Image (cartoon, rainbow, N blue to C red; front, side):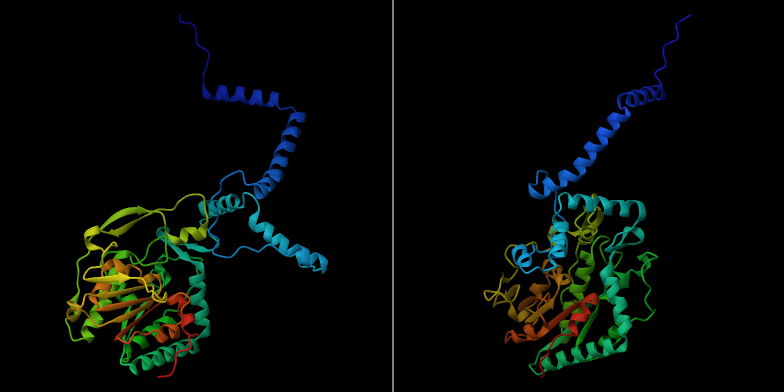
Length: 403
């Protein structure tokens, strides 16, 4: 009979390891280990604050960090606010802070599906909390808010009409408006008919401008997602649909066919982990999604502009200026100004610019409408004003001149 071999089961080995650890760490050793760990937790962040020895990717704070207080002045004058300012300054720069913040946020996201700045909806769709909160504040302002906006658009159209310029209004809805079914249960509810819905109806029914409604355009843009899961922006196919609709409206005003420019775009899918909303979450892991990318043969990817010259404004006001070759001007739509935010960035790659004799791009971030009106080129025949639903409050503050 063969002699029975000794057991090598995992449980037997784990028991031996446990016994060895208990025998190695006496109560005295455990006390020493605790002191060492506690000292490391206190001392290492201080060293990292003064002399960073570990490379840690900084947080995308979306805010300005607290400035260093004027220690000398406040000490000499006995200013009691010194302690508060010093604490805020230190809190923003404590060693390992980015690591600890990301670790905390990762636990909230992984275990509880929560983020302080982002709603985590169905289908892993992210919504910016501040945008959703803005919609609620708008509803609380009621009809007075909408009437003020309507007056602003009427005044803008009147001013442009006095200069023989036609206004085209383009509205980009927020993701939470178009994909409200994907919002999480803890997101606040809005009424069935919102102030934004009423504003859209007003813009649609008024003949003093041409209106491109993003909600309607996205609804007829095929099977493509209207928004990225991990970003506030509309997807490339949705932006292409908007660009084609803008050109079609202006072509119709020029008594040209609506399909004056009707390219067929092709796309391929790629994994993408650069969604802007993930930066608000500040977590350890990357969140990826599959997105539609324009194929290179159906997209302007830089280099010489087709049929003209694309350049920066020497004066620095317009972000870009496109001018078609003089031999092609007769086959182009009239000159226009494109005033809008990052939602119109894809229009350049789509080829929208090259359907016009001239295009002057003004990035609306921080530039009020009245500043754009003061710089209207004499050749301008159309002004395209694009706005995002969540930023409509900005439009109520513009000082539009009288006609």
